[in-house]
Amino acid sequence: MAKVTVLGAAGGIGQPLSLLMKQSHLVSHLALYDIVNVPGVAADLSHIDTPALVTGHLGPDQLGDALKGAQLVIIPAGIPRKPGMSRDELFKVNAGIVRDLATAAATHCPKAFMCIISNPVNSTVPIVAEVFKKHGVYDPKRLFGVTTLDVVRANTFLASVTGTTPSNSTRVPVVGGHAGVTIIPLFSRAPASLRSQLPEQQLKDLTHRVQYGGDEVVKAKDGAGSATLSMAFAGARFANALLRAVVEGASGVVEPSFVPLEADPLNGETVKKDCDNLEFFAVEVELGAEGTRRIHQLGELSPYEKEMVRNATPELHASIKKGIEFVAASKL
Ligand SMILES: NC(=O)c1ccc[n+]([C@@H]2O[C@H](COP(=O)([O-])OP(=O)(O)OC[C@H]3O[C@@H](n4cnc5c(N)ncnc54)[C@H](O)[C@@H]3O)[C@@H](O)[C@H]2O)c1
Ligand SMILES: O=C(O)C[C@H](O)C(=O)O
Image (cartoon, rainbow, N blue to C red):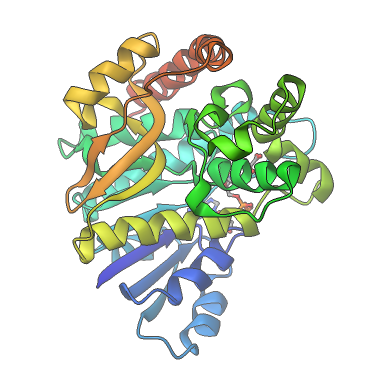
């Protein structure tokens, strides 16, 4: 069992995610940190009769205690989008939040597995990498941008157009990044029986819906934030998969994630050749006790998917560079 720390635990994602992690039999201690409201969230969850001990930690003075001994840190701290905003517009607020939380993690739990939810993921993950490098504790195998929601959406939307029941076993890989055109669902990998039901225009519409699924929720919430409940579900799915690999030594655990491609020098190099030498890319990752065990290569893509990868790389290069330069310009 592991100590899991949630940073931003009182937020729209943080609360339901903490509820789901409290139900995990792989969690011995759930440490909840936020700058507001977290004592109430912790008191509430602590009454649930599952094994995990719940502690609440409010404000920067208590951040160290939240992180000490943590094996897994999940970060959903930061502001969400409002209608009309891009994820990149969150950078000016969230980059500093993620940098400071990563600094605390590099100091208090340098060997923890870091799962980053805060947007823009395409920049916040490189920010965490750079902070850990500056502290001399970087291990690319332990850093993950959580892109599971894109896969959850791809499965759900595919099932809705094919009249089938959504199932994680028919899952469609989603590669690239986590913003608009950088979200690349590979419907060519869907089971043949479902794929054959997709005429070209429907495939394009489905792809667009996955790429802009986040906007659908932002619009429906009408100023009250972005996806929280489906994100909590996706975040807990990813965290539990990682815990299964790390704590239980389970083999063959594969999840999508936006990861540093150097985490698997062999396959990472092959992926890099396919994506214009990007340092980070969302791929299917086989998880092990050490974190990233093996990155799945992109393999054979359809011409439409190849074109999407080509269209995504300029934005990904810019977002990754922006995160790296932000830390380089920060006094740490
Ligand atoms: N990766 C994904 O697929 C995905 C999906 C949905 C949302 N998100 C992102 O997750 C983030 C959080 O979304 P939300 O809806 O939970 O927002 P929210 O505003 O409801 O909650 C954010 C929480 O972070 C806390 N916070 C702010 N600064 C902090 C700091 N310095 N330290 C600790 N906590 C701090 C706030 O107090 C708040 O409780 C957003 O950036 C959003 O865009 C990512
Ligand atoms: O859309 C957003 O801003 C939140 C999140 O990245 C999502 O995909 O739902």
